[in-house]
Length: 295
Ligand code: DIR
Ligand code: MN
Ligand code: MN
Ligand code: MN
Image (cartoon, rainbow, N blue to C red; front, top):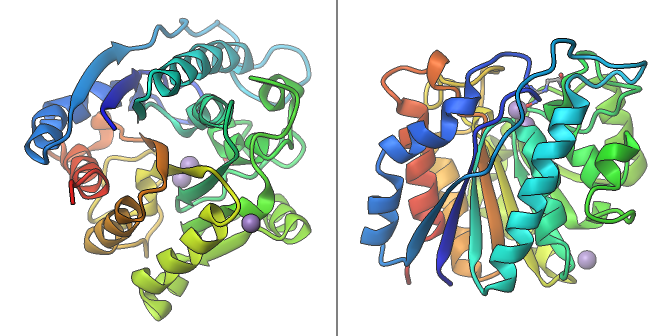
């Protein structure tokens, strides 16, 4: 399928500013040229419009910073992703912080039953009740599962956008107590960074694909660059040591690409203001080339 690049220059869901520059930094790492030299047809659709920050991050009592802005961006992204898929194309979303996965997953799941593979150091399974920070990028996977503030869970329809048995986390190594609880309660499959070291990425991805693509129409990949070890991806807002190696992640992308199940993908949390010579964008481009390699 031809690829639609969709930039989302938005960082109000994160605790630190700067990943709004992610889409352009990834373009500067020659994403389009590299995907074309992999033989893919690519259209850069540009960036979606993002609202400015209100003066107060928290309005009312809901403990979710910039919730209004986040809902606005995600509604636009949701519509853009739906249109791209309806046109027979494959949306490739460039973040931006991970709160935008709410819109991309709602869009990808609009007509299809999707599974999700979520690469991240974190779970992003907090709700306004459990979040220690109030940052919505730590709540987006929970919202897609139907848990959390209704402004997020009802975006693109009232139903949960994904089922817990069709979600797999990979690379996890920093979970809050409320997230652990949700994982246990919903029975979500998780392969920590240590599990990847112990079992090998091939085994992990085979198991993940079996879970997410068995009873679904296809797979959405959501890749938080902090899932990688900080030595490979230093330009992220919340680095955690002991992450997965770039080569391991490329293997994962190749296996998912080869499976032929991909519906859409997002690559998020690239923060050029914290990066070293755009290394994190370069790593993201390597991963996308592996995912979209023609076979
Ligand atoms: C933390 C950090 N669990 C939170 N989450 C991050 O604020 O909810 N997710 N950084 O990517
Ligand atoms: Mn993360
Ligand atoms: Mn199933
Ligand atoms: Mn994340």
